[in-house]
Image (tube, rainbow, N blue to C red; front, side, top):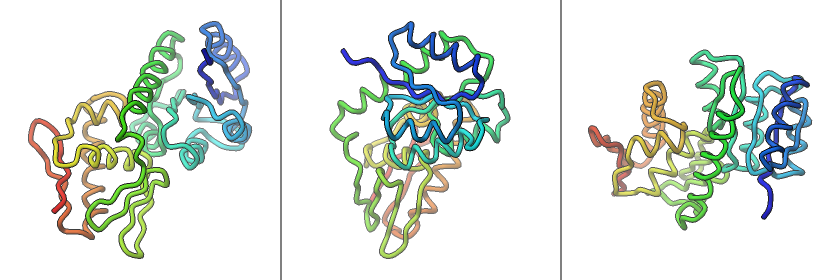
Length: 231
């Protein structure tokens, strides 16, 4: 059985060594990079199953690194490790494509539990035929999940990874109710109050992006979730 391959980007030698050794003891295969530039090169070569990125790193920070990784791979889970914990930091992390966020100091048990949760979720989605679809027609729009692009006529809108994930869920549940908790767990990792408010903002942004076709509506189903209706 192939080992799960992890890309670890951590510039603190002691922290990096501890995480690498702890994961290898649990039978993960770990590629460790000590700065953002080396991490991106390692990603291109190793094509890991999951990424763990420190936010503050030399040459290229974790946010920039995550954006570049998302340009190559939309589904690889990314976990941020950081001592930064402001609301803006969290929002930025999720905006650029993070699936989870762990504040330092943390326990290895917590990290591994969260890694397995993300990997299991990804595995479940791969088994669903709809999850393999990355090109959609939504009314007059064409939506490319792979390229994070929403287009109508000659107009193109580049979506953030979170926006694209949420729109994909809505399309996959077209004419059915997308449960709030399902969306929050999949896109944000949990259904906390902050994440719930964040999702409402993202829904408003998607509605604005889709204004070019008045037949498209994202309907709020009170107490349950949202429904994408076309026509």
